[in-house]
Amino acid sequence: MTGRLEGKVAVITGGASGIGRATVLRFLDEGAKVLFADMNQATADETVGLAAKAGHGDRIAYRRVDVAQEGDVKGMIEAATAKFGRLDVIFNNAGVGGAFGPLDEVTVEDWDYTFAVLVRGVFLGMKHAIPVMRAQGGGSIINTASIAGLGGGAGSNCYSAAKAAVANLTKASASDLARFRIRVNAIAPGVIWTPLLGSTSNRDLDERVARAQPWPDRGRPEDIASAALYLASDDAVFVSGHILTVDGAILAQGPNVWGRDETSPMLRRTGVNKGTTGEASVVRR
Ligand SMILES: NC(=O)c1ccc[n+]([C@@H]2O[C@H](COP(=O)([O-])OP(=O)(O)OC[C@H]3O[C@@H](n4cnc5c(N)ncnc54)[C@H](O)[C@@H]3O)[C@@H](O)[C@H]2O)c1
Image (tube, rainbow, N blue to C red; front, side, top):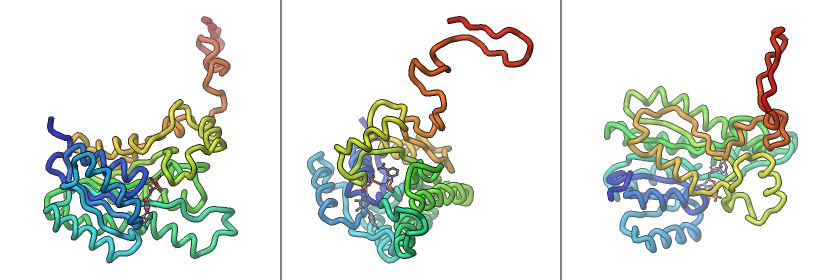
């Protein structure tokens, strides 16, 4: 069977762990050639090992890159095109938790570090991929935002601001680049159980997530890889400027004033409330 990314070349940043690693492996499974970049050589070697074990050793390349450094990112794009001959997809995904704590205690250095990785890193990936994609007649840019960038309460103040920048950069550039057939989309993950969250047996976090997230199962890196696959593939040929939320309905739930189980006033009875119209409301059950 032909893979959904057969013949395509993808660059994925942050491919040594979590969402990036799951996406590297999924893209390879779907027939792509993948160059992934990451700062962490040790965990990158593990990703290469997993790809080789899955029989994809000849279609994967790794390059040590700090996405905040322009020279590194330029070299990453050059290495991908030199090795695989073209560039169809870039997934700007590398990230860190960054600065946290009350805003009046955040240092300028920590603030700038966070924005350098999360925002400058995405900008640089786009900047150096665009000329190659333009010359080729098109491509797909996918950025990792976060639900933290779409509203309060899901991340630190600095992280949330940086991810909001990624979401808006995605939208603003999508319209600029459409005439070159370059699609630009972002994924806004909810809580995804990756090493970034720390220990996966964190009970406190489990309880907090259970309250915030309606979907009963944990978000997995593979769930984001599937979303990235869609945006990378030709199935999404008319999709650009979209922020794809993948969060087990966290944002959809919103303030959750009424609850969502059988004790909720919105669910425990059935009928129609006709308000102050003067017509009678009906309770059917
Ligand atoms: N896990 C979540 O719940 C969640 C939610 C929303 C958004 N995200 C975002 O998803 C992306 C991936 O996160 P993850 O959960 O897979 O984390 P992770 O820690 O498992 O993986 C992130 C990878 O990025 C690499 N990296 C960090 N800074 C880098 C730099 N400057 N240059 C190159 N590589 C660098 C790390 O070495 C690591 O391998 C991040 O952008 C993160 O902000 C994660």
